[in-house]
Amino acid sequence: MLVVSYVLCFSSFLHPLLANKELHFPRWFKFGAATSSYQIEGSWNVSDKTPSIWDHYTHTQPHRIKDHSNGDVACDSYNQYEKDIEMAEQLGLDFYRFSISWPRLLPEGYRTRISSDGRQYYDNLINGLLDRGIEPMVTLYHSDMPKIFQDLGGWANPEMAQWFADYADVVFSLFGDRVKLWITFNEPLVACDSSLQTLGVVEPFLAPYLCTKTVLMAHAKAYHNYKDNYKPMYQGISLFTRSFASLLIGLCLIRGKYLQKDKRRLLAGKVSIAHVAFYFGAETQDDAELAELYRQYNFGRFMHPIYSKSGGWPATVVELMKNISSVEGFPRSRLPPLTKHEVEFIRVKKYALILLCIYEDGARIHGYTYWSLMDNFEWLYGYTSKFGLYDVDFSDEGRKRTPRLSAQYYSYVIKSRSIDSNKWKSQMEDTNDNKKPIDDVA
Image (cartoon, rainbow, N blue to C red; front, side, top):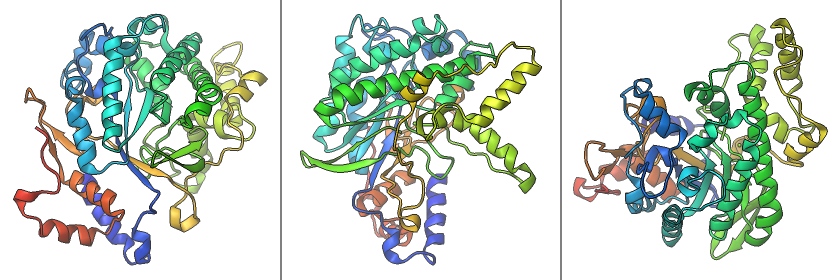
C-alpha cells in the first residue's frame, strides 16, 4: 500500500511538469519483479540439497531472527513454482528475476556432482516462464552459499573466486541456451560488510576487505568466461547489478544493442552490479567531502574497480585505509592491493553507466525490477517485513497468494506503459469487485 500511495502521489506530482506523452514509458522499456532462492523456495533438505549458510544460521541461532523463523518452507516455491509463474503472467511481467540455490544445484559445493532434482527444478521454472512469454533473469549469488565454504572462510578466502567461477560455469552450461540475462552478485556490500558479521565471521579488520577483493575477482572470472565462451553461442549478457537508493531500487543497468531473436527483444551488452538500496547525502555543504568519502567507501569499493577509466580502488579509500591502518599499528594497509593484472582483469572498458532520467537527459534506462514478487523470508526480520506485490498467507499450508493493491497498479503500469494514476483510479472504480484485474493464486 505504501508503494502504491507513493507512486500515486509521485505520478500526480508529475502531471503539471511533463507533457502527456512523458507519462508513458518507451515501448522498449522492460518491467520485472524479483525474488531469491532462500527467501522463497523452502524444501531446505529435500532430495540431495545440502545446507546453506542461512539454513545453518537460522537453525543454530533462531533468536537472531526477529520472529525466530527460518526459510525451511518459506513460500514453498520449490513445490509451487507454477503459482509463481502464474503471478508473473497475471502481472504482465516482461522478465522475472530469481536466484539459483548453489547447494541445491551442486550439493557438494564444487562442480563434482550436479543434482538431477535441482537441475530439473530450475529447468521447469525457466521453461515455464518462457512458455508464458516471460524472460528469465538469473542471479547466481543471492546470499545462498554452501555451508561447507563458510567453514573454509567464505568470501574472505581467495579460493572462493575460483569455486564461484566453477559454479557459474556449470549454471551457464545448463541453462545458458535459454537464459540470456545473468546477474553475478546481489548486493556485494551486504555480503561483505553485513553478512560476514551476521553469519559468524566476526573479524572486522581484514575480512570485509578480503571479501571485497574475492567477490570482485569471482565476478570478473564469471564475466570473462561468459563473454568468451557462452555469449558467442547464446547472445546473452552478464550483469553485476546495483540498486540506487529509493529512486532506482533493483534497476539493472546495461549497455548494448537490441537484437531481434525468436520474437523476443534481447540485449547484447556488457556488465553491470545489485548493490545496496540506500544513499548518503551531505546534510550541509561542510559535510560534502565526508559524504563523498563515505559513498566511495561503500559504493566505490565495488563500482570503481569495474566501471572507472583507471580501475582499482578509489584513491580516497586507498588513502583512508592506509592512514587508519597505520594509526592502528598495522604494518601495511588492511585494504589488500590489486596488481596491475587484477586491475585490468576486473575493469570493464568503454562502459557507459546509465543513471539519468529517460526524457530529461535522454539516457536509456532499460528496465525496472520490483522487489519483491511476493512476501518472503526477509532475513533477520523473518516474516515480519512484507514487500510483496502479493500477500502470502504463511499460516496456510498451501501458501495462498493474494494480490495487493500495489499488484493491481503495477499490472496497470506494465500493460498500459503509463503512470497516469487518474486513468488507473478511474479504471479501478469502474471494476466490479467480483471481476478484479488480478485474482488470488490459491
